[in-house]
Image (tube, rainbow, N blue to C red):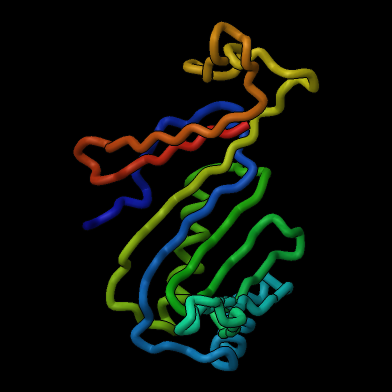
Length: 195
């Protein structure tokens, strides 16, 4: 599948983006170790001076022959590195199985965001040499500021959730998820609403 990173989409004025993320899942053909990753990426990502090691924690639960659980065994393994820009507005994750770039607010435009992500992705791919990208995800996390008192959701949402039995059980929170297929594009859009 081919993607056009420079395809134009409708630009929403005053979009309340608090974080934009591009995530590549791609298995490297040259799996680097922690030392190799740190040496290479600290040089390539000099504009991201804060570096943290990203460990993956696994728990294993087993049952004895009598059905009683054995104590849980936890193992930790190195999974990648997380780099943060000096102003803390950008985050790069270089993992053993992929790459992510996040831009926190203020979000300016798709062109600058996608352009920077592609430059950084190419540096990741130059070291890890993945044969293919298994998944490419783009996420925008939006936050809409509401009045301090409980809001009238109709003022903010086209199809707001309804309370049960005509308001007998008021809504104190909600989570709603939709998945949309974009015709002729091979894209899926997942939209989650939460309060």
